[in-house]
Length: 253
Length: 298
Image (cartoon, rainbow over all chains, first blue to last red):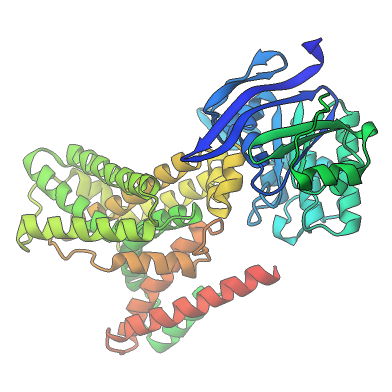
């Protein structure tokens, strides 16, 4: 029965000095599932995700990925396993070109003797493809990211994750600071990602942002799991009510 | 552009400016400053500063003479550069581990090294009394007015430009300076990048120091004082952003050449050399403003 799990985090604890950021949190993501991770600021969402993508190390607890124990100590290793993260405002370097950003940390190389050079041809060609796939209009992959809008940046970051065959895509507040039209575009991309069989964790403090694409919600509050809700069981209003009340839910999925 | 304006202006002001002899002598001074500026630019693009380069320049040069006088110049050359690399490593570790801005960390190592140099030598000069191998390789005239250091300067411009623009490592350098957080989440080991760049910067500063010292065949403890500011100015004039993430090796090298032309040109045009710094100050401000404008519109 566990075969349908992509991610299984068990009893995760993390302290920052005297602050208990996570207190025995269990968290599951099934294959081809979009999980909405909800909670107020300081609920522990970011901490949980940083542990999963290799930025932080849990003090205790177990993590399984594809039913194998996951031991990673850097974002690089997480990316090698197929865990790609798109952080709000934090996934592209503004002072670099689109093509250079696309392949940051996973640059294609061309060997000449002992030396490795950037394979610029591949970079430009593939970046052009990704730009086309996510429907962005720029003249060339050599354009600097700083000229793109917030939505275009998110789209490119999501396109990059898909390009690198992510098994799990983590979206950290992907709609914050976007126009309504751009929000819709990003949500369309999330649906595309799921249709390709990739699982998604959609982190938000706003249930309305995530509601249309999410299958299941996990609620965090002050470092503890408040509960889980399937989308078909609730309206967004009810979920928002739970998030703001901070009460434990009896309903466990 | 600025480069051409200065060149033409001084050529008009003084007939000797454009002579082969003078251009070669500008290139001699520029090679030393320029090699240092290349290292500074490489580090600044990764988002860090190194003020200690002037002290590393003097310290490495000194060490080279002392070692060369006891063994041979080739071994001394490599050992002195290794010490420079260690100093760069320490600069990097202090900046990363103590989490203090590199501006402060390297201000500290700059004063520390200079102080040690003054203390050990008591302010006395040391003469070079060793074989001619490294002086031949580095600075003895080849033909006419040209020295090997000119060639090394150009070779280093090419190598460092290729590393920065054409290798994965160069991509990591840009990313580390542009946004350390993004670089890290994308899997770049930003601390390693910074430490390596600190080391490259220090080794190039040390190399510049050794080149200068094989030219003078003499070292004194005040050697290269305030050169760090000229090197940073060269990098900024050449388009390197103070905030990191953007810049070029060729730009920094041209910046250094502009500084060299200014110094020589002002003297030849009959201005007292004291005016040099005033001009550098003006050009620095103008260049930084233009670079920012170009980036914001482009």
